[in-house]
Image (cartoon, rainbow, N blue to C red; front, side):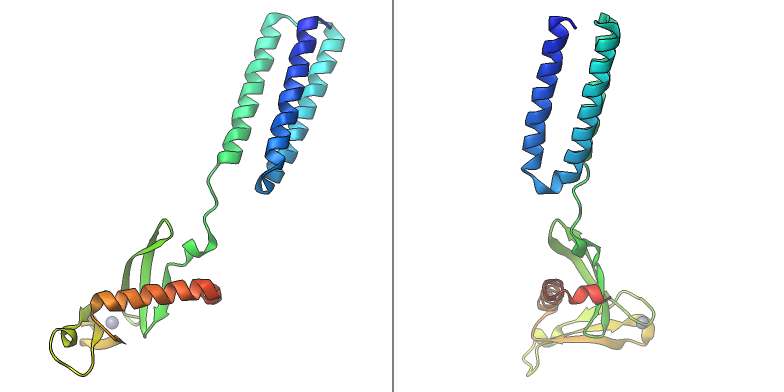
Length: 184
Ligand SMILES: [Zn+2]
C-alpha cells in the first residue's frame, strides 16, 4: 500500500466518522445514518481489498473511485435533504360545518381560500350578509345555494362574510388541535 493511498483512506475514514457523528445528532436522520455508515464501511472494505490485491491502483482507478464516491455522497445528501415531510393536517382540506361543505387550501401553515359548497349538489354557495349592513337584531351571514331553489344552506350568526369565514377558519384550527379532523 503506498503512502498516498493510506492517507486517502485515513482521511476518508475520518470524514465518514465526523459526518456520522453530525448525523447522529439529528434523530430524524437515524435511518440515513445507518445506510450511510454501512455504505461507508462497504466502501472502506472494498478499497482495502482492492489495495491488498493490487498493492497500488492506477490513477484512472482512483479517479473512478472518486467519481463513484462523489455520486454516493450526492445521493445521500439528496436523500437527507429530500422532500420535507408535510404535516398530516395538510391533507385536511374539506369538512362539513354549519350545514355546508367547506373547502380550503394551505399556504404554508395558513388556511387560505376557504369557501363553502352545497352538500347536496356541490354548487358554490353565495353569501348574504345584508343583515350586518342595516340595523337588525341579528347579525348573520347566510350561505345560499342558487341551484337548490335559493335554499339557505348555512347560516353563521355573529357578523358579516369575513366574520363567517374567520369563524370557519377558527373551527378548522380547533378541529386540528383536538385531532377531531382525523375522524373523517
Ligand atoms: Zn345545492
